[in-house]
Length: 223
Image (cartoon, rainbow, N blue to C red):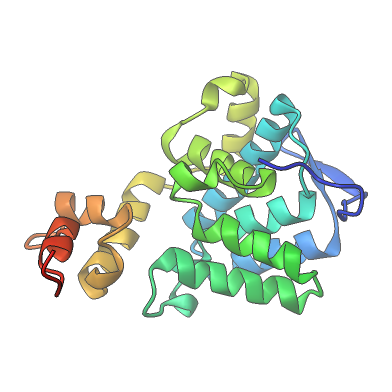
């Protein structure tokens, strides 16, 4: 993971949210409202908790990062599940495209907008995201705490409880499963190489996926 250099923009204005010090800038406020406008309440709350967990983890790890990039990428990381961004690509990529477009509309530099794209597109692929820039890795870490409890031991029970109290889970497990299964049913070709496949195999009758082994062995070459 790389660190910030001296030219990287930093958010100077801050506030406390569920006991976590977070940036309080116009871009962050607009990202929160953008997520609130497009996401169901359970998904909005998940995104906010993920952001707060990410900031808390960054503090524990003393990990330098761009506060606005981390905020926008984490708050918008599941925007691809929202009806307004329902498209032909896997939902992480639809969300990444929407989040990058949002960042550009707010005047963010292209390098920062691209980090936001990476954070959203790779948030469910930790085997890659955790080894990218700090901003991308922290986005994935915060989401992982809220989604599967991964890395929760880095935080105190008081921190976790305060964040969950501020943004309740609202049947997160059941509602997230429902939304991913809808994608599996309507756009199965976007689910074969990502975690949506696991939901399809567990919950969607008749769901099957092609084998990458078959793709190699059936390639139109002699050897």
